[in-house]
Every structure is written in C-alpha cells, then in structure tokens.
Image (cartoon, one colour):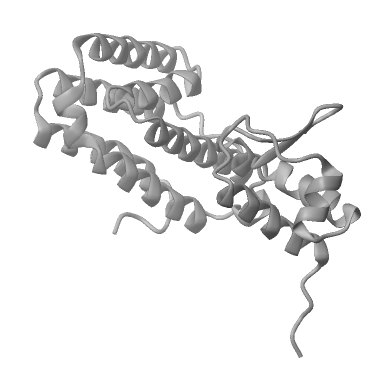
Length: 230
C-alpha cells in the first residue's frame, strides 16, 4: 500500500514549481497567501506549513506584514540543518575530507594561472600567523579558513568559494563533534608549515610542486583517521 504524501509536502513542491515556472529570482515576491493558495489549489494551513519548511531550507522567506519572497541562495541552511548525530566516527570524517580534497585539488591548475601577487602576499601573512600561533600553542582556525578562501578567490567563482567554505565548516564542526581537539603543538606547527609550502609553490608558479604540497597537507590530516588515503 502506497504511503500517502502529507498535504504540506505536496504544497512545497507546488511552491517550488511556481517559482521555477514564473522565473522568480532572489528578492522577487510571491502572490499574497490567499491568492497563492487559490492559484495552487491548496489550503491555507497546508500553504503555511509548506512556507515554514521552505524557509528552513533557505528557499523563501516570510516577511511580517510584507509577504513571501524568494531568498538569496546561500549554504547557511544546509550547515545549520546538518544532522550532527550522523557524523561522530572517523570513517565519516574521512569521507567528507575526501570530498573536500577533490574539490580543492581539482581547481589548483586554474589557481596557478590566475592567482595574483596580492593574493600570494595575503596567503603568506596568514601562513606565517598560523606558524606564530602554533609555536605559542594557540589554535588558528580563523587563519586556516581565510587561507583556503583567499587561495581560490582569484578564480572569481562565488559558487566554488561557497562550497569550499561549506566543506571547511562542515569538516571542522565534525571534528568538534567527534571529541576533544588535538592540541599537539608539533602537529599544529607541521600544519602551518604545510601552508607555507603551498605559498612557496604558488609564488614560483610550480604546479607540480603545488599539487604535491596540497596533497601532502591533506594526507597529514588523513593520517589521524583509520581509513587512511586511497
């Protein structure tokens, strides 16, 4: 016997189809609630439930006293709604790291061709700050996050930057969920030096050396988990 789909879920599909059919873009308004419910052939309660669900997914937003609008696309809702209870073992952390590695490594050739001296200068300053903090037994998550963003900023691809930042966030949140952070100062200093090696390869436009340095950085992270590197 087929499972009956709840009315509000059907309504979600109807609203998304309406947005696509009418080629609505971020900031565009949908019709008033009553008119939209009538046009889609759904009840107001189902419409309201669907709107709440689509708001949680970051697709639309309901503005009090104004109406319903198409929301600008971001990855925030994906990160906020991640089921962290699913990501509490080394194998799952390793799986996500593979995805992050493939995403970043795949764009390295374009980075070598497009990166500018000002980008490299910022990267060197960030890597040196990471090394300084490591030697003082301090963490440097902010610098690490900015390093990976700055490295790919030269490609002028907002979608790629958003994905890289999303995977950085997810991976680091997974590490926090998996247990206490590793405060080994030698490991932290090695990580900072990995980033300095990446900067050196970018400075000399050494694509092969950059690939080796970048993969070496991720391999050192992989070694923390039983799954290892494929």
